[in-house]
Length: 202
Image (cartoon, one colour):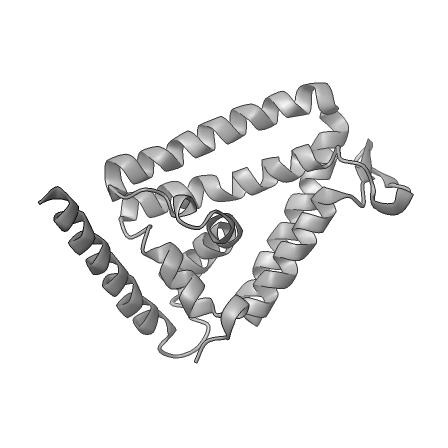
């Protein structure tokens, strides 16, 4: 099974999984990937609205919240649609998380204002990316996937850690045999990488 091209979940998952086979590195990514996404949306909240569409403002627990129809909204929407097309069940959960991240980041951005928000985003991004590079350098001992395919790595990362968590905690897989087929591809990729590495070191 599996999709075709852009929506080939097996291909995407195997690519990302080949760079994240160490349990500690996987745990580090599970901890840091979604905060990276959330904080990115937090910063994108301050981008201009599309086509001069007015922002939607409403009170929440005594605080004002501003939802801006801008780049942050567009990114959350694109990620949500992409994940849903990869796998309806897990993708719908991922889309819900993307939506909650957009709403939550909009709330935080409204309260902080740009002058403080960008500093918070900078700290979160530095901590999370540093943690991930440590995970790769110390535990995985392989360069991050983003060095080989930046777009695929950044787009797949949130969905990968979610799907990995669903499989680990609940035994979920998009269809029967998915994880065994993906694992075969991951092992083949790792073996190929190790052979190339040995040749370069020889």
